[in-house]
Image (cartoon, rainbow, N blue to C red; front, side, top):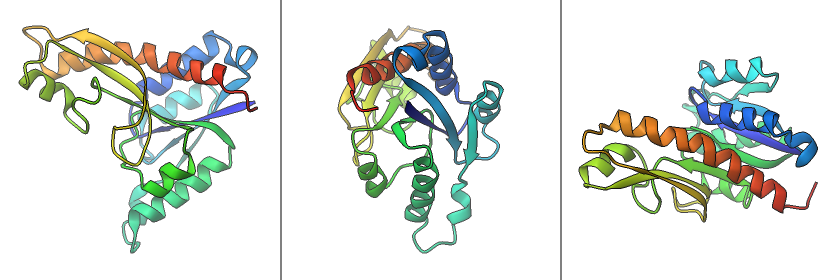
Length: 200
């Protein structure tokens, strides 16, 4: 069975879309795959409760616990790797995971680490993507599923969805419209990857 580990920091709406799609499309039977666990860096992340309700194992690796460490990012990532690797992941899927990962972490999961970003990459890497798209006068915005590399939001693109930027859009209204597309393209991109990989 191909285990999918999902990393979250908040509400977990993309996580919920992935779990729902996996159940509705019977990934266990069709793709020999399952969401095996959800891990958060915040104990109060709403998505943890959603995952538990759906029978998915959850755990927390709190980044704040490593604040006093001489190398807090590296120490946190090492603890996160240890927790993830308990589940022998085929894919590690970032779903609103608000931590910049170290090159060592990215290298450990090379080819198996995915993210979704709320812009049409390579445009608007980083934060505040919707406000920046509106300020730049963009006619279109969207979301991108990509492989994660050491350079932030620069990995190979797997899928994109485009939405129009409306005249009266705010960052919030645009974000809501983009999010509906994220919930469609992320599970589809993950399923395509699972379908096209032969290792168990």
